[in-house]
Length: 348
Image (cartoon, rainbow, N blue to C red; front, top):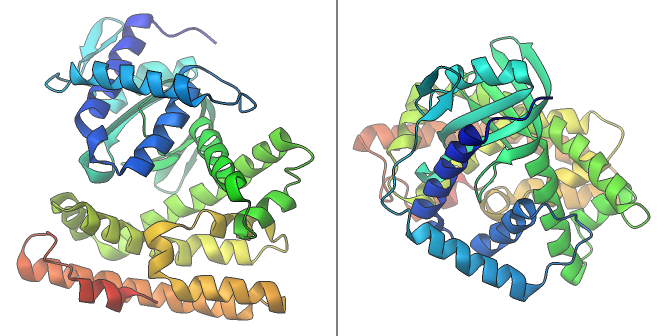
């Protein structure tokens, strides 16, 4: 596989750094530090068996923040391709050159309006009905925040290296206290204690399939909810509101595609893994699903869990419709559009 030209990679990495410089301050301290640890490990190309020293990571973070200070007013660079320069967001033009070389490039607007760029080595490519799936592994340029899966237009991206690193951070966090929960059941199922690296790779394989199902579910949601949903998401000026909008669609996508597929399998490890990654607002909004999962562990029956998933598909579609009605009524999307009372009503 040919090496990519340094000027091209430098331009992409510059754009990644500008995005980080202009948006990194909007994260909570806990989220920020977690992602910076993972980013440090990626940049230094450190193995997962390397114990990170707090002093070394701290010094690196300080240096990175000083560098970001110089980029606060910087602009995104055009990308040098053979014989031409193209806009950083002209993904089609870049991939017309990159994909035949065995690489993929993605650029777009991610959560909370943050531009996301990356270049990775392609490991799989397939086409389905109305979509294209591209999987990458080792990444040559990326940002502090590395989404493991995303859809850009009709292209679904799965970033296996970022997935692997994100999973390791989750495992490391679990190892601090080692609670008996979905993550412990996941690690036991994949034989993590005896073969950590092999277990991690098996988990990446499972999470890849789950992520693909989720992105396909998002496409189905888009068909059901219409373009107004994306307009509503794009117009929000409040992070909490955006998180709520995304969580509702995530639950709808999972009830339509992901959970029915997992529940149809005899192997329960992928299901444990799903609940190990179901955290934060998604967990708070869907306590009935968590309760049904916990109940299936003691009673060895998943009938209640299947019922909740079916009910959830209806509930979240209706909840999404309520959110669209509130958006249409106001003609804009802001914190006031979705009150605390509505958030409570959306819970299931």
